Length: 440
Ligand SMILES: Cc1ncc(COP(=O)(O)O)c(C=O)c1O
Image: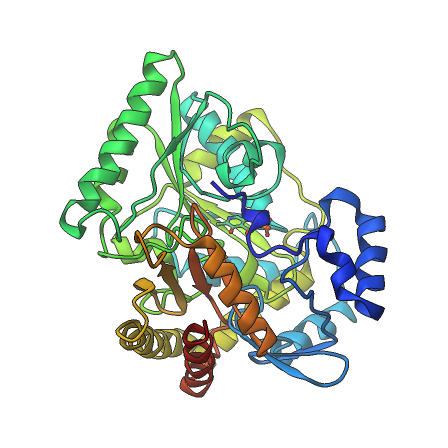
């Protein structure tokens, strides 16, 4: 398996090929950031400005952003920027004082989630949300066994890294974390997908038990983004969640990727499966670039946790975070971004599917709303084609269209633009991708 940070990453061994100011800048950064420095693309990019679905370099050259889901309502959206700066100029303190803004935002957010999930705790990142969710689950169930999918990425704290197989360059998660195959709708027939995935989860829970490890939770990203984007058939997750509940475990829905309308039909990815999670974790698109996250859960789960621990997060749920959170929801509603994600996502998927007839190396086009995966295959044996995916991503970059890679092998093109992506943007992406695939 390819670690997530190795996908589409610049190789420092190639720095000399860059030459000039770019080489100098890349080396300067590598010297400062050391081994943890990761840059995208064979020729790293430097941007100075963003607007809508476009990123601009210092020469004013525009790149179509079909990759970034954090600026979900569009880069530097004026309504969000204005809300943040206005509140920043007025008051910004931690949340141990009353502030109506965060109360109103909590009410607004909770109203979008199933009624039993009626408590929210704010965080600053998706990693913090998942860290707290794992602790809540463990405390509530008395177990420490976690089940995740094989290329899952849930964040960067110690606890969450252990539950993120995609973070490992060598070795594997500890014994209390069980890794199951992703619900690969391309390789498993759709009519068997639900039972197959549930069977893997059941076997993992059974194996934990056999080894004397009590089961705590199944944590999944409900669009399976780093696993390669698996959205269909809707409802396939239900059988696995029944298995989890029968084993007295909790279901943690990680909405850091699919949340806030990306999948089009619903605000939350788990709703595609007609499910009610025990804990929902939020992050990235929640603040359109401002660091805000949340954990939403049934009150008894939080009550049990608070009997043993306190939880305070200095920057979480501040007046500025609340103002930004409100503004993002305003834009999603006012600009009908879910409807747009649905309409443009379907259009783009159809155009990609049509294109696959001309390009047999496209094995599958899948996804929901504006989260689309394109599975690339080797021409000879039909096996996953990660090198080809890397080549295509870099050629697109050279033509100023930005996408990324996903999947266990890194062979899936990941198309995940801001939700203001239009049919005109989609046509541009298709035209450039068609050219790139047609080249040798
Ligand atoms: C599914 C999922 N969960 C959690 C996270 C962690 O979020 P953050 O990097 O904001 O801490 C990520 C980040 O990529 C993610 O993709």
